[in-house]
Image 1 (cartoon, rainbow, N blue to C red):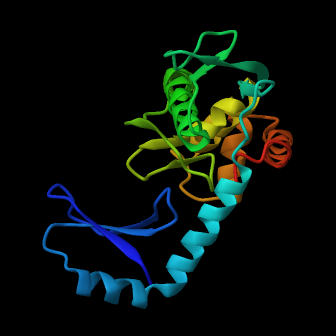
Image 2 (image 1 turned 180 degrees about the horizontal axis):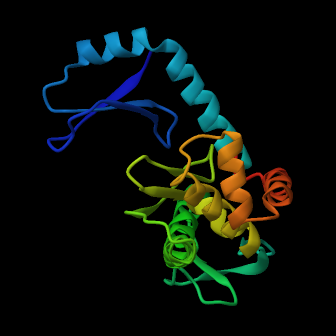
Length: 219
């Protein structure tokens, strides 16, 4: 199986990913050899296949950008404009320079990630204060299998995809993760805690599932 071994002096762990050209990449410390990489791939054939399938699903659901494309931010639809140099959302439109489709989508994801950080991080802090809960860090990632997560230490993570959803659904996901500060599970006690923060959580959960199906950039 063809693969690309990428060494980094700062890396201490080994990771697998599919490159933009479809080639399997092994991210590893400097001392990790090609022989070891081949052995790792052979031992994790099922993981590699699952990674390929997931990558294909993500690529298939990425939007095709055209002159009449409209993009979501907090549930509202905005037009996409091609600019000379600007890459931004100005409150009325998304602006991305012309170029190869994959590159433009990557630029757009960076815009969304910045928007998500600017809205979700302070909102999480605001809701944590309202419900008298402590949190540590709040980070924005590019997860495509979950809207958010919470660690036992109080670190919250949210997918940038969430910023495309309406505000009440964003709040619902934040409340879900904050409820994990009280119950780090999905037991009846957890849902009781969640209902105190988000009384319409069941309705919001259904709406989130509907949103994901209607706007399949999240898969």
